[in-house]
Length: 410
Image (cartoon, rainbow, N blue to C red; front, side):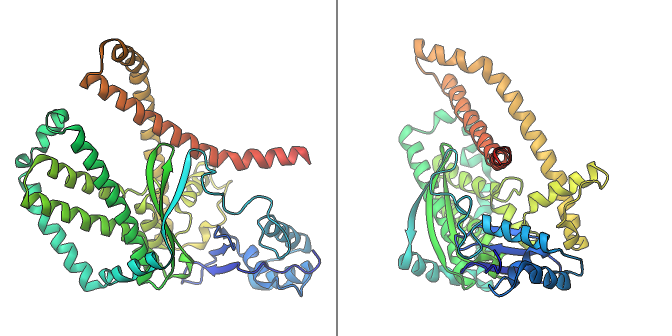
């Protein structure tokens, strides 16, 4: 490529507002990369009129470090492999086709004018006065049930869940919780509309075997840090409001099933706040402090400590002292969470290895009792966790293995 030109639709963005060297490059298909300043400056100047040597000179002037024509050529090839250079097809699709992930299926439910109208109609709920009022009311409606939790019957339900809930009630609970999940995604969409961004679609799918929902927002990185934080927290906000309606229903129609439904909604809401799995809490923390790829930066910080600085994350110096403190704390917390999760999974696996085959055999010969059903349910949950962890490992190792195979073939 004698005079490379950036492909149409590629977005270049500086990620923070403090003059630090953190940059985003987004492809036409929506895939995003956090890139080094060298890549950013070469891509920004690749307009079809400059040679790699000229691009190297401009990048050297912008970064203050020497850049060779060979280095610029390597950057151009990196961009071309991802379909970001005009006339060059990507080596692999920048965005996997729907359902191509291991155990992952997605189905678009809402899009177009209907979704845009719904999001626009609810965007007023993100005005500060409305947020303050609704959060106060939501907290107030929970005071009585949580203060008198014994009256709800939830403590007795924890000891014997089968004594209260009939199969039909369980199905109704599941249906209402799924509807609450859609309202959660509508919260993200309304927050994006309040920030002036377009929402591409809201959908549902399967992640291994359990249902998930998602919202696609166009050009979210063009929004400010505050707007990105609001968009990330919009789902939890709407789900918290949905829980308030469910607690209100319980206050008007007291009963253990109604209390359980409201409690499960709250559990789902607050579990979304934890930052160590890629739920909303992770993105809220990332956008609040303006840290891109927070988990990767956390592992980079731990690797730097573990190797006494011999292995360095090139992006860490771009962040200020408060951000570096957040990265370090997150990296340590994430490592502890992963260690505890792995240890718990190993202990659980040991229990199920002995109990599950026995209970399945007894269920086949003597019928399904409550105790056997509980063990079988644990086995299903264990399988979901293991398959989900395997999918994450596949997504991490897959590109590494493919690149290694390509190098060997070359």
